[in-house]
Amino acid sequence: MPTYVQHGGADVGIAGKDVLLEYNNEGIYESLDLGVAKCQLMLAGPVDQKDISGRVVKVATKYVNTTQKYFAARGQQVEVIKLYGSMELAPVTGLSDYIVDLVDTGNTLKDNGLAPIEKIADVSSRLIVNKAAMKIKNTRISNLIERLEAAIKKTE
Image (tube, rainbow, N blue to C red; front, side, top):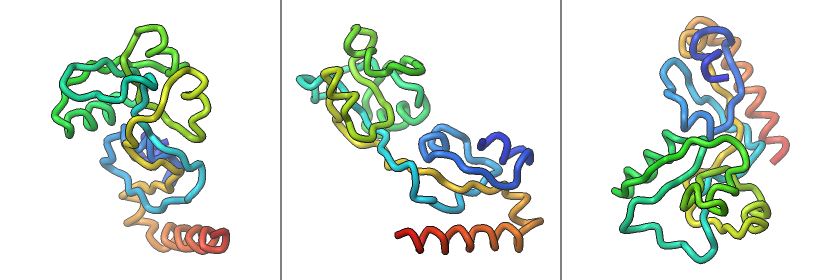
């Protein structure tokens, strides 16, 4: 969705914060947290391996950019393995030491002998707006944002 919005295929769209963290936000505004589809982007690993410092670790994830930024901020070298789906199997099979993935209840982690280690980001659905459309169609888009904000407040 961010690509469609950035390049004008859509004036507005909805994308998860996890997608936006991976995406280069040029050309779009993240206008509103819709407060739905809440979960967390987490670093997780085997229950008995919670100390990740002091060594190069292998991390499986589909969130390559976010994972690299996270470990760079920690000053830690990491080998990122891009993987889609069945993330929890990577540490179990020895493909990686850890994973970075979305976690809701944590049950899937638990079922695979894994545990959350550290939250990287809170995730929810966000309204995104094309920057050019915001200028050209400001009244219409601002009205949409205001109506969505009012609807969100009613549900809180």
